[in-house]
Image (cartoon, rainbow, N blue to C red; front, side, top):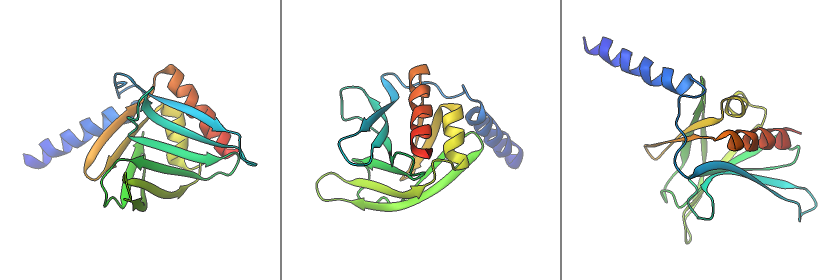
Length: 157
């Protein structure tokens, strides 16, 4: 009986995460994109944040057309060494390092902007992150979905 209940719960949770509109938008949060064109090569950041605050559970950075995306977390656990990201049926585990000088800042290894996970994220408009045992669901508004698609195209080239 426990296997059936556990299996049913897992299917229910995975089913909710696989549906494009299953994750609710968190009040005040959305995905936003900013381009930095002050350098020789343009770079961009895509952040899940509350506008006008430092509340940003996750961000991605890339250089235009470089097909390399880096995930980052500011203010997380000082000993964080990996995060897991999921969107739809795509999942990835990214290892990285945390610089804990003043504010702990985690930077993950690179992942291609054309990777199955990032393509699923751009299509679905949501991402589930597990970091230090904490699960954070990050769903986009319609404007946030546009920002995700623009960022994915900018990074992939």
